[in-house]
Every structure is written in C-alpha cells, then in structure tokens.
Image 1 (cartoon, one colour):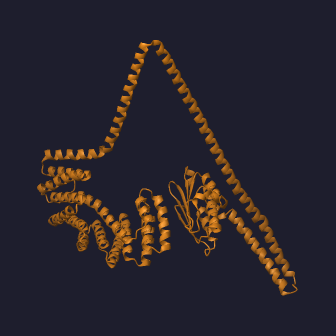
Image 2 (tube, helix red, strand yellow; image 1 turned 90 degrees about the vertical axis):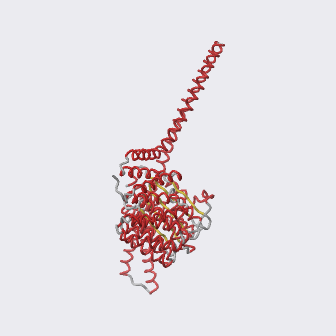
Image 3 (cartoon, helix red, strand yellow; image 1 turned 180 degrees about the horizontal axis):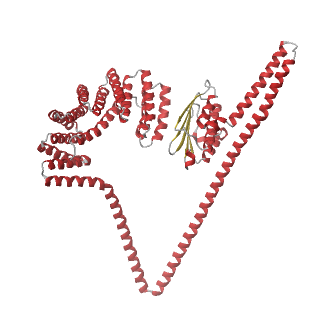
Length: 606
C-alpha cells in the first residue's frame, strides 16, 4: 500500500524547483542589459559549456571596460551555473560569492537578491539548510529594498521550501501566504496559482484537508484562466490525493478521472500514468478489485508505451530495412529469370555473356583487392611518416632542452663562477689598494658593482633556461615564479589554475612551460598590452590553457606572416603532444590563445 503523503510530496518537489528557477531567470533577465554575447552563452552553456566559457570571458572583459556591473554579475553567475551542472559545487560557490562581492560593492540590491537566491539553492541542494535559510532571508531583505515583487515572492517561497523540508509546516505556510499576498499585489495570476498550490500542499501535510481542498481549487481556477496546462494537471492529481486521504473515494476517483482525461488531452504521459496508478489505488481501497485491475492495466499500458516509443522507432527502422532487402532480392530473382530466358534463346550468346560477366567480376574483385592492398600500404606509409615526424619533433625538442640545460650549466658553473672569482679577487685587491683620489675609488666601486650585476644576470639567464622550480615543484609553481619576475607596472599578469594539484607528465610540463614562456615574451615584445590573463585547468579529458591579452591584436587571415614571433614554434610544440591550439584576435581587440592537450594514456594524468 502506498503511503498517503509521499506521492503528493514527489509532485510538489518536482514542480517547485522548476517554477522557482523560472521566476529567478525571468527576474534576473529583467535587471540585466541586453548583451548579444551573453545571450549566446545562455543558449549553449548546457550543451557546449567550453564555448560558453570563452564567450563569458569576453563578456566579463568588456563589462569591466564598460563598468557594466549587471552584465559582469550575470556572466559570473552563469560561470557558476556551468560548474554547478558539472557537479563542481565548490567552484560554483566561489563564482557565486565573487558575483555577490561585485553586487555588494556596486550596492545593487536587486542583483544581490538574485545572487543570494542562487547561493541558497546550491546550499539547499547540499542539505545545508541553516545556511540556505540565511541566504534566502538576505535575498528577501535585498528584494524588499529594491521593491521588486517578483524577487520578494521568490524569496518567500524559497524560505518556505526550507521550512517545509525541515518539517516546520506552520512556518512554511506563513511564508507561502506572504508570497501569495505579494503576487496578488503585483496581479501575477500565474505566481498566485503556485503560491495557492504550495499552501494547499502544506495544509495536506498538516492533515487540514478542507483548507487544502479550498486552496487547491482556487489554484486550479487560476491555472485554467491563464491556461497553465501542466499546472492544471498537478492541481487535479493533488486534489484527488487529498480526497483519497480524507477517504472520500468518490470525489478522489472523480478528480483522478479528470486527471486522466486532461492528461490525455494535453499529451502529458507522466501525469496520465500517475492518474491511472491513483485510480487503481482508490478502487483497491474501495475493494472494487475489478476496476482496480483495469486501472492498473491502463497504468501498465501507459508505462509500457512510454518505454516502447524508442523501441517502436527501432522496429520501424528494421522493418524498412527488411522490406528494402526483400525488394532487392525480388529484383535479383527477376534478373536471374531474365538471364535464364536469354540462355534458352541463344545458348551461345549466353555462354559468352556468362564468361564476360565472370571476367568482369574477376577483374573487379582483383581491382578491389589491389586497391585494398594499396590503401593498406599508404596507411602504413602515412603511419610511418607520422611516427618519424613525431620522433623528429621529439628529438628536436629534447635536443633543444638538453642544449638549454648545457648552456645554463656552462653559464652557471663556468661564466658565473668566473665572475664570482673576479668579484672575490677585486674585493681582496681593494683592501690593499690606495686610491689617488675619490674619483678612482668611485670607478673601482662601480666596476665591482658591474661585476656583481653580471653575476646576477648570468644566474637569472641560467634559471630562465632551465628553471629549477619546474623540476622540483611543477608547472604551476614554475609559471607563477616566471610571471612574478615581470614588472607589474608594465604588464599585469593574472594566473588562475584549476585541478593541477598533482604533477603532470614531465614532457607536458616542459612543453606547456615553454609555450607560456614564448607567449608571454611575444606579448611583452609585440602586443603593447597592459593586462594578460593565464588560465590552466585539468579535467578527465585533458589540460586546457587560455592566454588572453588586451593588446593591439592582429589579423588572423595573415597568421602565416607572424611565424617570426614564435607562433609556429608554439604550434609545433603543441602538435608534439597531439594537442590543438586556436588563435582568436582582431586588430585593436587583443588576442586569445586556447590550447588543449588531451590525455592519451594514464601516464599523462600523473
């Protein structure tokens, strides 16, 4: 026997988040300016999240330049939503908090309310109800300051859902009633219908069935008026359940039948299935087992029809293939009969025809075999060429790294030691020298200073050619050490890393370090940029590197003309790791370089 409240709880919990999310999206759209890039990101952030992230990065850059805080907040929220749908709730929360800080600094009460509702929903999803309630309450206060009825009512409903999940139905009821009053004030009949449905639902949980029926019937009337078909079906099934719980099986069956009829009319198979299941339960309680059996059969039929829709499509496809094959066999049979007739008419011509046909078949098969053999050889040759190219590339890169290490060693152990010795000897000599005048003494001190600076320069060049931090601490630390040496007054470099707590394969770390080093040097030399963003992230598929500057940019159509500034070298290094590199740039709009290195085996993930 199904418990009386749980089916109603399931419907309520399914419909409530969808409605509240819809209200949140509508209200937030109303407070943000129109932005084509932002609109494009909204359409693809679920299906193509990586492309959406690139678009949102540009939105944020433009919003910062234009001081468009609402667009910046919405872009940060959408980044958080992408992380949320990927199951990365910690990252999503960080982005939501960042959006909240921006809204707080700009004192945008409506945006603060929207962000707090998002944070509360995430915390509620993770069962942190006290914290969720805290953020929902703040969302309510900010919405009241902004005098935005939609966000106010939304916050009331969210607070009510938290109380309801805690089992505090009286407090939940008060929040839903406040939401209802707000919607009535705003003359929002759709929102009013949902608040009435929530109120009726809570009365049902409190076993106050008369008030549950009264509110659900009011909600049903409004939904009929605004033609909210799915909402109508929800009200009908909940009314049936309330009357079932009251043990008024006649009215319960009546509403269940209306649910079945209306769900058939609007083609709502899930609610149709539930209507039949409820009818079967009601008839069973009335001990009308024949009717209960028929209703259960109809429930099973609907359930099977939902399950078999895809299966029916597959069967239809198989039947089509079968009929096509059958027709082809009939055609082949007719051709054979015609051949036999011709043989009977002229045996000689038939024999010649058969021999000719056999010869053609033999020739065709021979050609196919030869062509297959040739394709195999070409494939082997191409594979060997690619292997040799990979080996050559690896040899060049290895030789380059070895030469860097050799030169760095020579600089550090040879020239560096010589400079150190010169400095030591000069210092020793200075103790026994008597200078004729102050000018000579100052010149000697300057010479010592130049020798000291030369030692430091040799050491810096040596470390840049083979950074010890890359070998000891890994890619993230090496890149951070490299950019820390750049004068922030000339070029501000921002570095963000995700998922790179563990060390990568040695070859990947070296190649990516050199690529980033090459790119940063190009920006310093050619881009005339004041800001550079570097983002490193690792997921199950591979490693993503995003490098974006706000410099002069260049024409992508003339990419081949820029080989002299290292772009060809970057492409060669990335291709060595079977990765891809994409350049996005326009004159005067900066440059974006996107690199992806796939994980081809388990070793690369280590």
